[in-house]
Length: 287
Ligand SMILES: O=c1[nH]c(=O)c2[nH]c(=O)[nH]c2[nH]1
Image (tube, rainbow, N blue to C red; front, side, top):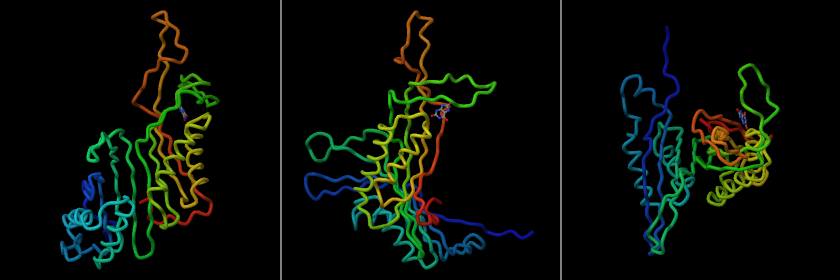
């Protein structure tokens, strides 16, 4: 039976780089987690152990640190593009580079110019795919935790012999947004575009009177695409962070929607894509 090598890629995952700009007393801090995956003509190392085409993952890690020093880290997207283009341009066997970056935001605290605090779990994300055919950039956010304490209903769903969930016309709607959006062009102000997308997601969440988290998901993706012509597709995963009304009757107390049990699992997971009809093809962007 013939057996062949299938798709493969390799690279250094999760290089944690912190870069300080000390130009003035007001330091700039970038804190990234960078994962590189290279692919191309890599059959030999798999089939015979010939490493002539295998730039060590250790070298890839060193390149991240060297580029942080040489070029600084401005936006994760521009740093990712620089790395992806470098590996494809300098390694003859490498035809495709994927660089994934998580950007941990630090907020300034105090008046020193050199003091920072990490607040929420929220992180900024980006993925760059680069080969000689095309370059794709995805940007996003994970763990953006949002809650509406009213303006959410859930009813009208099918009921079978296993259904116990009561219909509700007033509930808490809470989620931790993972959203990723695809850029239709590379001519983008990355910082501005990211801030706008986050803002549009939050606005749509807060302003939508919701009959389901699915409806809210679509409204969020729609708002981003409606306001941002540079983007063509938004993918989201929204866990439904259930808040169950606690029965306080055994204690002789009523509970008019004021005391909840915040369950952490299981949770409903609502996932979906919103995209323009004329979105350019995604190619390997989501791989
Ligand atoms: O917004 C919701 N969508 C669902 O699909 C669902 N299922 C469920 O039990 N509660 C909810 N809420």
